[in-house]
Length: 425
Image 1 (tube, one colour):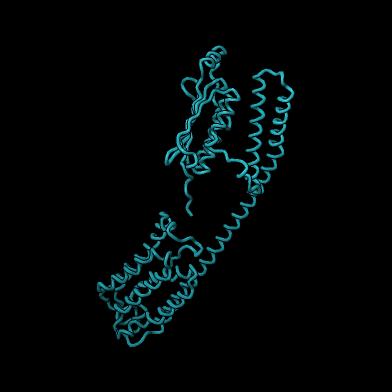
Image 2 (tube, rainbow, N blue to C red):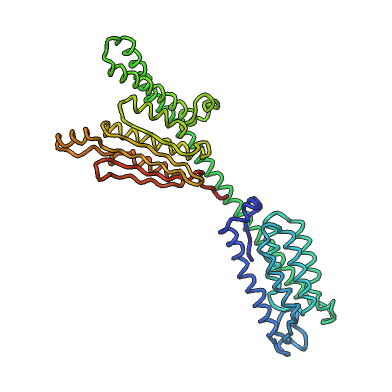
């Protein structure tokens, strides 16, 4: 007996297009087809003798035994037709049950019931019961119990059905329904256990997000607030400070303020309680590359940026990931090679987003490196920055490459899909 997936499984065009699932459903029909067609043809050629009562149960007790029968073309067509409709059992279980019941009864009428000609009907009965169509199964089982054992009697091939034949037919139907119900209960319990585990994991993840939000608020947010406050106080009291110092303090104040705004957005997402954060605070994306460049220039970095295409056409998750990769790359240049020149290029295509950040040493930085006897500063490849960028790219189905340039600079190349990959149900 073969069962299918439970009634809770999603149906519709999306499920039909799912290749592996459809192949699995069709593949389960192959053994049933071999049993029904091959087994019935083999049984039709078998003879059970005339004296010892051997042979199929419906032929026992007859003087003629079980003589071979000829399968006319119509009988073979009925055998094959009962199997052909089985791949559609998950979408139309009752209709498939009706068709297989009809082909099975017609075969029993056309040819003396012989062999495993009920294999397709067994699968259809199990599938319909598994999906909750109990009334249809009871009706089909009742019709099969009445018609199949009496097919030879109805066509004058036998005087009356034997008790053994009636008993075996009832046992077959009862076993099919009972075993299917056992499997259904086990599958249902396994599904409920998976749902319970998933709910517990979600609860643990929620608790962890709240804990992270609390730690971020207590440590990072507090420190950033102090930095912002002290930079503002220094600007207010340091009117006589040199212009470069005032610009640096202004950059510290503005950058720390922006970091606090973004941190508040992250905390709101982690806690999932700040519903209007997105309305008050724009989500970081490629549309804010100009702000990123202005802050880097205010910090003293020589950086240029070009964005080709419409950032609003990109999926939100990919947009945020691309911006964070650009932000991390520019920040790494500021940290490890502040005297270099950085170039950011973003090409937004129909299917992919290409992002390239190039860190080029200038003549002054090259002279300073040679005078110090040390190579140009690299991107900090031993830290977590590049690892984090690769993880962001992989999370949206993209890829990222980073490495040093022959001239002593550094290059980061990321290719991301313009939309997040679709998950199958």
